[in-house]
Length: 613
Image (cartoon, rainbow, N blue to C red):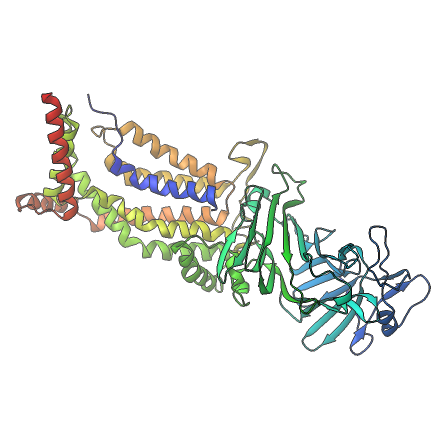
């Protein structure tokens, strides 16, 4: 009887590729339009008062209402009136921003040139999902939260853009100013916090915190998929980046933080601090349990940022990015905020940044997104064709040696050590190396994994259709199921089915030579051959359809290349003659082969000693 074991040389490549999948999954490690009419040359103040409208200078000098239901006035506050101010809308070519006088907050952010998965206007901030406020103590020990107070808006337009000052007055010479500057185009807002006369207001011996709280609005049809690529990133200690888990609730405290990114898969909110800050506390919470059409929010990000006063006054300058998580846009801004995109670990990230992003950007200028993916696949496979050739030559050599290996298996079927020793001698004489069959697969692994990371983060794929797939950045749907299958979902995607079929035929062709009836472990290898396409089918069903398209086209091209190599390039009879000639030559062992031979000789000696005992 032959031993029913899996040849480790045959499955080594498979195990390494699958390990990459598993490692990535578990470590990785998803308007209302109002235009401000400039009635004056440089200034507009919109005010609603219970009694009368005040001119801008009087409103600033007399101060604002600091009395409300939730807070008490600052010490020294003189204004007891009930002044309320209208919301203010700022707009440029890319954004429409709405600010509330209550807390001086940004309450709405609409991206003008994008829609969500329903085709509706894409809001990143709406209905109170964001809160940015200051927490500090007054000299009389009162905890002040600026979100509880009414600010006065002052708008100033110039050739560079629009500046909005949200002013909280305490007295004639004491005020707090949240200043927002929106350029004429782009997604970056200049944000600063300034004060005057606060030396006699604020207790600078106690902690002063800037709190940033954001509930991330759902933007994609698959909540789980969107959540997988939604993470809180931050940069610290110069150019180091780190992140919180995307799968579970987590928190962390870090020093020397220079920017904070609230990732929302294809969109991002990034707060850039002009001065690196210590003891910044981050928190990330998952806000849903299961897939569902009723899910509104995916994550809750919270950051607490200590601020340092400048001569007992606020003077903090920041920038706030609200826009696409698009590498081509983010790379144009300072502070390397593009590193909030997960390109992949190590060499995989370099391949994406310097090869696939430029290549896809070039192709997408001339072709649709789907055709760009296909042409990128063709270029990749042609570049890897020498590796495919080496793989097939190795398989052809092993196929020629099959009869002799079968004889050794039969001759030494009761002596595994001797069988292995004689098999290695045969390989050495014939000039064959079984490892050459999996080394090319190892060489292809960085390319495969880089693309595995590329397609989920490639913003140019978002919303782009191809054939029946309406969005290449998400899964395609040809049928909805009335129930949900674990690990598969409640829909049927066609591209993963085509990719799995292509994987099956490729695996059958590449492994067929090792699956003859005389090969020990044949039933197990056949099981793996059938299992892998099924695993891929389940995995790809909820993945970006662009990756399934790539994998389908890639395997079809590889099959065609293998057929061309087999029928027009490689002559198996010639290989057989070369092997026979190699056997006649004096055998020379390389360092690795000598080491292996020494190990087998020692193992054989130990076995003989044990048998004598």
